[in-house]
Length: 83
Image (cartoon, rainbow, N blue to C red; front, top):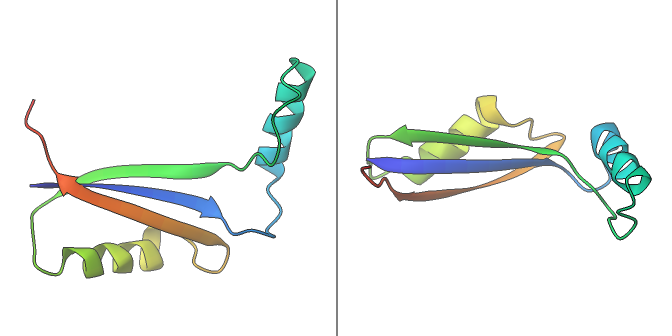
């Protein structure tokens, strides 16, 4: 079993009003050192191990999880740890 974590962010240059709102709020709370705040998505799932898993995760991201026109993504695949 593999654990896949996908991190999705808006591409540089794409307006991020949510990130701007968070940054403004942080500044109003006194955290003036914060800059360039960007909001993204984090997706985690488990899947069976396959030889073509990396390619399949790319397809998942391109077809459903991310909007490749506006978003960048990267992912990690690791061995799932039984708890």
